[in-house]
Length: 307
Image 1: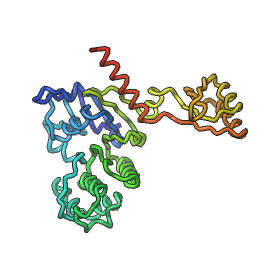
Image 2: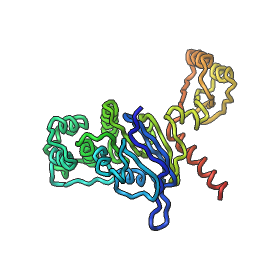
Image 3: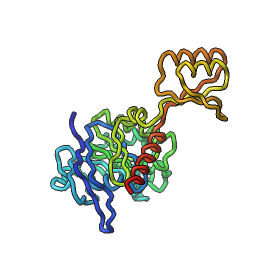
Image 4: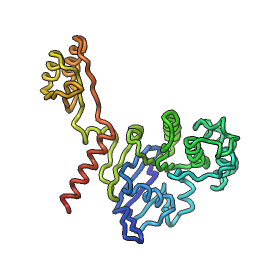
């Protein structure tokens, strides 16, 4: 594998005394879609701003491909595309001119075919001649993404890219992101839509300036959950199915609810028999919001013990 981003011992202390990052170590491979999750103020934006050259670190080292972001900053920044949280566009410029101008800022020669492809991928082609002030908030967000892709970056940073974007546009966005990853572009995304982390190859949680969890989404669901949640109506066949797995069922307003660590074939077969006998069965997998809440609860408990 080829390393796209390498961070070692990254620390940032602001003049106010706030320590936003505390010895962060992180490695991301080329073509990987990486999600950084954490509560507000955890250090997500500070980390991105350091890599992109907007904020100077207090200590540590950051390399984009083979380039140090401080010593080789021009070469490093040419490889980076950034979509910040804030919308920053010229309201009276057209979509086409805005995206084309962004490409020129990186010293790239004009490439109308590439600009057209980016706009089509983001469903903006029919708006290419519109002024930015004529677009909805979600479309403006997509223009920001198009600007970041205009110069064909090798690593794309997306800080809350789908904030204010409708469900359909979010789906189009993730399709475009996966297309970029398949072409070898590395994608680094922060999001408060935790279910979007399911679309990523790797997820890290940051809390109070430290990376506390780092794993693939499926591993996180296994590690930070009680397994699968089974909900069914209270009929003898359903109770028998749950009993076959030694699952303790509790009565709730939703019906019988039980948690099991795995779904062995015998249990699935018994649940199938219960359904054929008239039971209504729902099997729920742990979600990324479930993982997020458990991670934060564990970190809060750890800080309380240390206090």
